Image 1: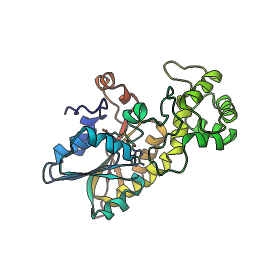
Image 2: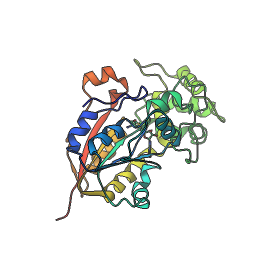
Image 3: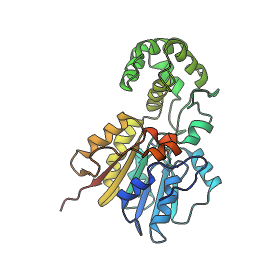
Image 4: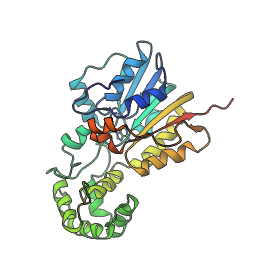
Length: 292
Ligand SMILES: C[S@@+](CC[C@H](N)C(=O)[O-])C[C@H]1O[C@@H](n2cnc3c(N)ncnc32)[C@H](O)[C@@H]1O
């Protein structure tokens, strides 16, 4: 299946997700990370007039942006909310169960490049990084408040080799709102470039994870998914780093879930060439087991 073009944002692993989701005609699908609506539009076509797509997105600006670019069909309901609350959100809209759920984690290319929230190393904007405006603190606040030791630990968790020198430099540097560009520059002063990776790549990842509470949210969302899924319902999770992938792998081993993918599925080379953002995408698919 060909993915629709999407404001320069191409949904990842579409064929692989659709293969695991099977025939969607008449089904109810929850796209828990609507983003710019790339996957939602594929699902909307596949469920047909008797099916429904519920699309959830934490970032109201992304929703507004996607709606300004595309008209979504009537079988799509777009809701603003955090997927950690997915079971409460669905029940408040009278939706008792869904057949399929997608979680395409992280941020969209639009957020990375155009949201003005300091996600990119060259952004002159303040290092904010919140996908959900209701979150309490911007990323610079974590850089300022964590202290050298906690920052070093956060960096070590994401596998940063130069954690000690980066944590020392950052905690001395950030005294208040700082631009992404300035912080990335400071890291570049103390740590070398590694291949194509900017020296601040892992620092930015660690701060984004903390700012958006990403790992705990995913754990809670998987619990919520189990509650709202119909018998034998399926969840597909696309993750972009090993900490997220591990959460899905561990969940798939708990009772009530069955793994439909033994190892994570990676995008084919052709997709990576077409869409470099897909490079680190990993897909796991899990199914709700039913007690008979
Ligand atoms: C990789 S993008 C999804 C792209 C989307 N599949 C598409 O094809 O356009 C991830 C999206 O998830 C959203 N997001 C991140 N954390 C979220 C959460 N806890 N609840 C709901 N949405 C979240 C981000 O704001 C972002 O728009």
